[in-house]
Length: 284
Image (cartoon, rainbow, N blue to C red; front, side):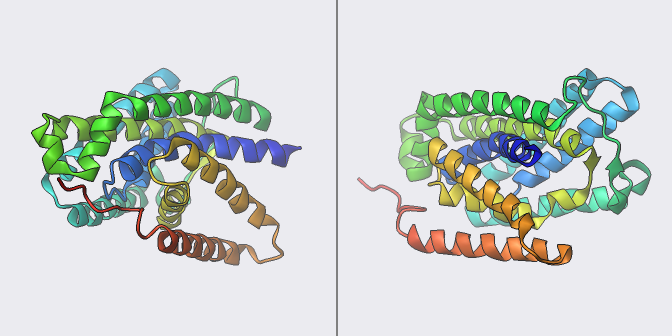
């Protein structure tokens, strides 16, 4: 029964981050490969602040501030770089934050990680985490569906399909990008508030390259921009990732096998959707 609750908890904690990322990468067609960097910084800021101040409220406010600053920085980069250059830069930003975390031993304990992460008083069991994660996920599903159907969602899609014509209609690219990245940051923060508490341990290995591959695979497999498609792929691929634990394999082989499997899934889906994944821009 605990594994059942574990699956629900992990899936529920993944959904806000992935759905918010889907708004930028899926609907906006922005080559953003740095969603894990946002959750990395948010997790460490929240955990370190809660440990040193003993206040979850102060920690949450610090996390919001960190997410806003990083999201604004990423939005600024997206407005000043071409798509390909921005994609490479977001990977560089992720690696830079990860290098700081790994080398600032006096604050982050580096590769040792931070044990004994404080928990909210109502999060005392796996089932309580699962229920909380489901509630948060439902709120995000409604929010992302509403945003996608709103005028903002149409503006973001218009910029993705043909930027020049969208601008001629008065759509402010800077405003749209800033809002999209801020929403993506809120999704990352929602996951950052729960995931370290669930593990009671914060480690940089949980924010490495394989998780970026996992996120991209979810969005591409679920039909980029589709809230319910990405939601379904999140559930299915998260269950698959956790079920792989039962394979009779050494623990040091499980990670590489997961990475290869999701890489193959991503390759297959990209080949299958090669004509629709990033469609040609509309012409008049």
